[in-house]
Amino acid sequence: MAIELPRELVVEFEGCDGGLHLMPARPGPPESMLFQGGLFHVEMFNFDGRIIAPPSHAGRAIRVFVTPLDQGRFKKGRLNYIGSVSDRSDQDLGLGAQIHIPTDDWLPTITCLGSIWRRLTLLLVEGAEGKIAEFSFAGAPPR
Image: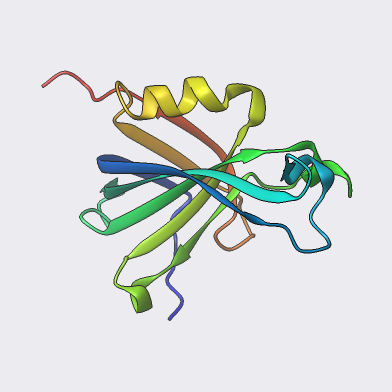
């Protein structure tokens, strides 16, 4: 089921989780993704939240997956977007989003996500359904 997405979404965090996935590598992954001569590893962090703006989407659940952005993604040229938003109601998740964080900023980002940041603003690419043009994190406003 496709949903119409607004240009901007503001998400308030409700919980978070993180992990490192490690497994024997099959042929094909770039060398930068291999660890100790043949293990495939992927770092990820995710959080659950609720959309608080715009009003048309307020209250909807969203799960955001955060992954490091490695240089391999630039091999085909400039990126036109840095993440995506999709309808995941078929998995009882409401909306789903994936955003990419530069590898050099990975540790400070996940530290702040687990401690002081409480909101995420997503700006979507006009004319490209569900593609994220930019995003920003912030602490919750004073109550």
